[in-house]
Length: 128
Image (cartoon, rainbow, N blue to C red; front, side, top):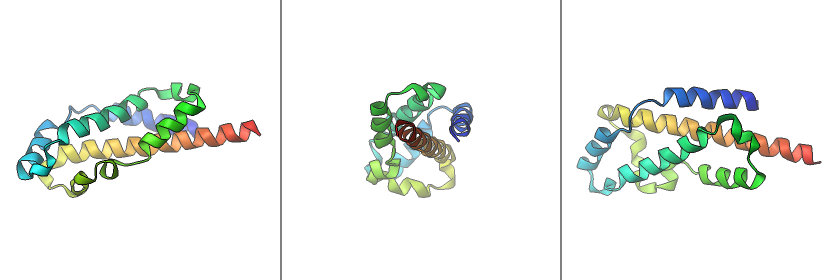
């Protein structure tokens, strides 16, 4: 299970080669002033997930505290962490780059969360 999750993270990292979707974000911002902070918020969110993902197999060496802290950080999806952007889930077709970036981030978050939960479970069993 853990090796499969690590492989999925590697695949996600290889697929995440597009540049940040500035133009799509700007188009969304032009439509609605509520999205003024979208670029820095998305950049921070994407960077955090990509940073965790980049650890690859080295995640297995993380201390229990780091696993728990990271798990708590990523258990909340973008739309819940930034409720003002929930409507981005229903983006129009012209925002395809933004949709793809959000999809890769969500898949990364989900796989990382599964991996961290699995690690915690294995360590709890081993500690018994």
